[in-house]
Length: 186
Image 1 (cartoon, one colour):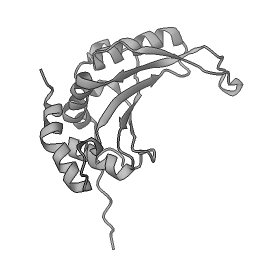
Image 2: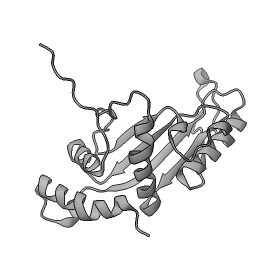
Image 3: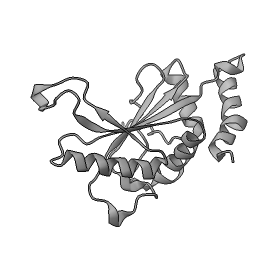
């Protein structure tokens, strides 16, 4: 079964972007390639247990088993050794990506307390966007009574857009609620 967000992209978002950006070729239309969800446990006292907890929570939220990430090099200031376990990550593509994105936009983000929109300044200059989520309990898949520790994670939207403006248009058309600019009080 095709996710609703994928249908919306094909039927509404892609034609609207083609018209707004003045593109002639269908292959030039920006699209979301993948979502990378990264959770770092950092300086937890019980790092091994924290990584297991993060892996089970991320698997429950995304529907895909995460990969354990390791430190690439030693950093003495952070008491970090090369090869030490840092956290977990999941890369979502295709159908699972659109299902997760729909749950994120329609159910999880509106549950954030005092939510006024996602920040606009989180683009990297190449058309990719990173959103930080400070609490995993906004997702409906998480059982509140089984939460052992509060986990935050980053969600990176990797797009085919070449500019930040095109990527922002893509995400806005998809339904991402960006923060409105502050009105100037005179």
